[in-house]
Image (tube, rainbow, N blue to C red; front, side, top):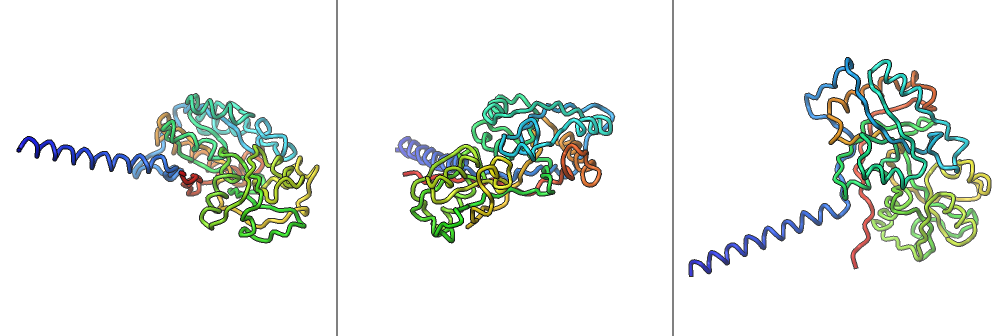
Length: 310
């Protein structure tokens, strides 16, 4: 009897442990993320400038001349050479930059952990972390040429559309981005779910240009685009901002960030890079950055859209 009671007790313990393990696994797979902004531990001191800090950095960002898509080629004139020279001469930081025009190539390189960090739209890096357990942190945000730190998704309709608000999207055909886009996919669909909005057919496209074309060709009633898309050079060739109306927008997210792999870069070195980037920003920022450079990373913990399991 004592043996049976002991076995029964063990089985109960195993069952309880299994239950909580299942809960923990659910938390991990539910797409929840920690804060992405770099916050050094109390008492962390930046590493000294008397030794060279070498960081291999991938770059794939909207306004860089060597990585931007053709849709904003007139605006994409950002260059990093002056920044690299300044960091090396003043702070003994050697940024060894590799440029990626194609996001899938960047993704493959990040998954393979070929770099110490990346400069890109944050979601491009953070979306791979659940499967790779890479410990990314954003040490700085990079401003756009207008001094803007933020990015939103815009929900647009044609000017003559009868749709007036987000509620009118119910049952309508919607063209949106793909899961590798936060502002054109995750943020808007999470917002729709929260507001109880249920589009009808959803068409997924890789670029804002394709979304605008689909809407213009009357193949969709509503389109979701990045907030800069209608001012981009290729868009204005076939569509004018006044041809459309904005009926909603997503929450703000950081537009572009300097992101480090904290398994490869110490907190002291990350703080050293952060201090250097902030020090050379503002009115004295390298001209090649097309603006005032870098600011401290804004708070942001992604909450990606996850479809309900049937």
